[in-house]
Image (cartoon, one colour):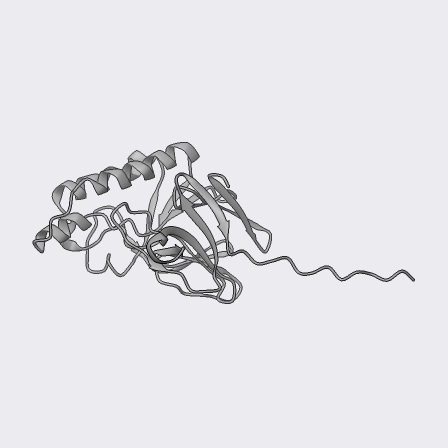
Length: 224
């Protein structure tokens, strides 16, 4: 247990952070997914009361993480915003200065919630490679690359009945070669992971390996 879980894919290191982000130390790139900024305002427009303080918490968490790690680049794996209805003038102003506050470039892999929205200064890009990784919003496995994606909002369901709890997690599907990031936004829900996925749980500022593959059994060698 700690605030970082290290993993390797074909010799390439990745760090899974308790802040629900991924750090690529070789490329000094910070990756997050599913901020869903403006979600409260979207719901309010539909007459559903929801407090409007989630965006500030989400953005402050991202800025604080960038200041600690000092990345060369921050990449959002889709759904930076929740909808056009939530793109208020105040939110547009915050997004316009976000790269300056991060003190590095910000890139966006366009997600389904970003479609049709113009976000000043932040271009929506298609799925693309970054070294050994294939970056996408929705799962998009590619042969020879580890797919880092968002969209799924993975959570682990622990316990049963009244003692059941849900916690965000990183979810690795080894067969599909896909690592799904938990949603970074403070006002987002989650969906239960598929059985068989290897998980890293995120809770109370810590990250815990869970449902990890067992090491292969050791076959005893007979003496000659």
